[in-house]
Image (tube, rainbow, N blue to C red; front, side):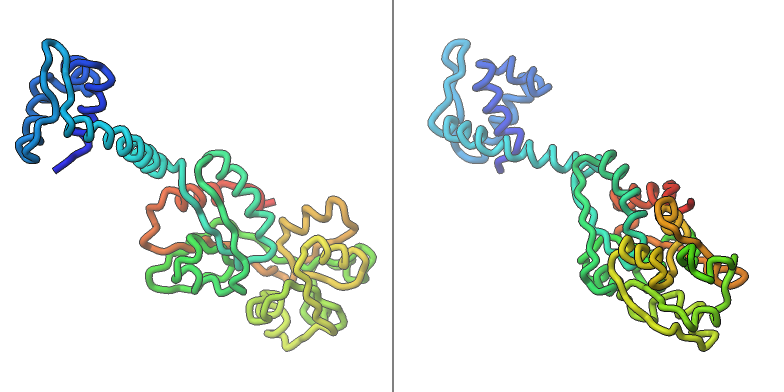
Length: 298
């Protein structure tokens, strides 16, 4: 059977012109090199070279094998290099699913150092599965799922990476801006701006309004955070957002952050992944960076 070492021997003999130099290049003894080729010759029933004094002359079979060696060995060497890159976390991809609209800006703070430290690894962020993140994870459409609402399932692991408080954001000119905390009833006359997510997945409804049997006067959905907060600053509505995100926009917009209830609404962002991938170096690296980042803790 033809092995990589047979092709390497033929190539090194052609390059170096002698058995001694070829053996040295391959870190073999000359006798080991000769034995390896003789074994192949016996197996195939051909002679690969003949000695002409101190020189080596390839037979037709030897010349054919050399041509194949020059074609095949570079491909095998590229395969070896690529596998080493995968092993060293220098190549690959990480597909991230997002079930958290406002976490996108936090994600950018994790992606930047991830890409800097993993130059051969590409990142793709998927949001178009309409927040069916668990199905996407089970179906191998994504590698990790970022969500504030982990669902316990067999074969899936979730790790908390940071915690945050959900606050109500209002315009400085709003009558609500004078309060440090709000009761659900105080939102009954407000226009509530949220992301286009089902009410069942909106914490402002599930943990604040619905338990108190309160609904806002109007509910309007917007996809873009910047537009949403421009609307809030213009006193066209109020929004419930992570404190760290609202604080960033408060640097340039006339908005006020107010606690929801006396204890506030406390949330945790989790990274979910398949148990089979728990030792995937790219996933491990991503989670380490997510846990060490300060973006979401402001």
